[in-house]
Image 1: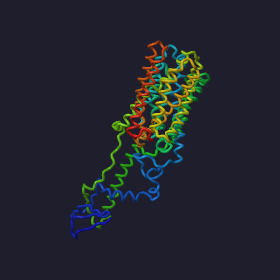
Image 2: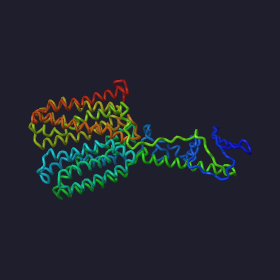
Image 3: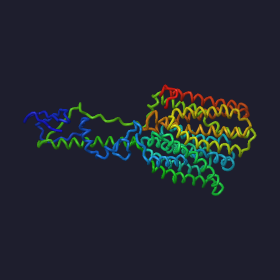
Image 4: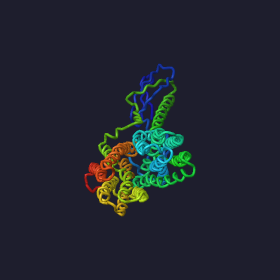
Length: 519
């Protein structure tokens, strides 16, 4: 960089940077230095200044290294998998175990409410607590996911853990069912959403080749939590009573989620950190230019820089952004989530009553649901691993189609055969469980990992709407025959999932026109 004067009395000064010229007007009459409030440098000067600030070892570390000084925006995918990613997966596993395990164990609370504290309330009234809990968590996912991307995954999970703890403590003091709607339903769903979506999305930032496998392990925590929390809650009810059981579970949320969230480490900077960095870099540029002005010559001069050389800053991210829905591929994924969710939960909700209507006992129904959940946990890991080799969209298509066919064929023909019921539980659990594991990896495939919690939250918003429609429709179809004829409900469940499979096929062909191509 150099300064050239046209002459002793020249009024124009030219700054030369790497062969390019910047016009600077220097009034010689000025007797005092006027430091400009805002000075914009050209891109060349900015690059030179930034190069001087970044140590050489940070250049060599690469932009995808979370420990480097570079800022990985996530617009491109990760190009290196690091061992710390498995720590993140383990932390996400325990967060999923606590949040999803508590949601899946609501049946224990419902039985307790019906037999003790709220025995005068109907099953329909009490069932809305669980509905508000689960659907609420997913329905506000488009908002909480974007909040997590802005605040950072660790802080979002911290806030979520405290909200869930407070909601359960408030639940322990509740005396009316509508109190439970607010505390155990809405508030817990809000806190769960703030912790759930970071734990669902973060493993994808650390893995590319093994993304499906890593995500499958993380979401398998939900099945593990359901197997542990429900029996523990039942034992505590007998030992310490209902209200202290809820308080113990509340503090257990803090004991499990906060240490796990402390281990969360994102490879993509949060929206809040990005805004701070841009502001700090702008201030550094202003101070650097002021220093350069002071070093020019012995005369104190005021400097005005041509507006043509202004540096354009990267635009700030919006806290709430739904622009990804303009991408027809992503919109198709949201519609897939909606259609599949219309049928997805019906086997979990209605299979126990089916078993009893067809000669089985209550214990047999509980055992079969246990088999279904166990198979689901295995499917999440296994099909997640398969997606790393076959492609996530291909695996999503296969798993969804096989799950729908298990309903239309195996369950439809099961009748009173317990072995056939076992086969159905194994097949449906295995393939439906993989759906939960693969949807986040498809979202990362389509939209990148820069705002994955936001993207996943929008997809789960579609799941919430589908659940609100599909399960009541299934129940209404059963009521047409007073709960005797299950065929209308089975046809509804199977065909809406087949419709979802056809949308996945459409998505696949949009991404790769080869029918058997890897995508």
